[in-house]
Length: 87
Image (tube, rainbow, N blue to C red; front, side, top):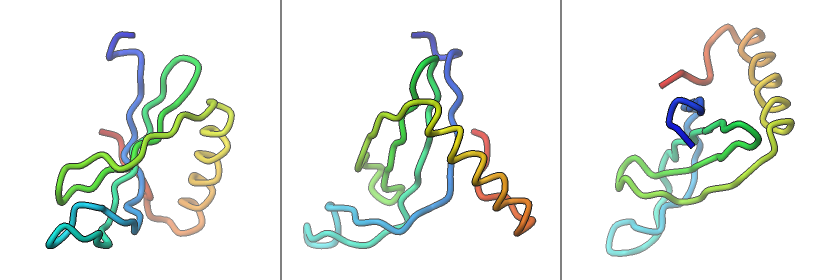
């Protein structure tokens, strides 16, 4: 798969737990969620910007991602502020 075949979106920052915290304990951070679209599926990745550590990767069908993005666009129109940015 070529790099040009995918769209990468940086989504809202979510609150989540990063296992690599102070003194090795988990800590709560603003986890960045990115969506990488491929031809027939999409990957949602959660990573901790503080430690540059990938926390979770999930594979979704494109229909689910489209449904989520339609909901995000509806929310953006209601609140008049963007919830995601293109890399």
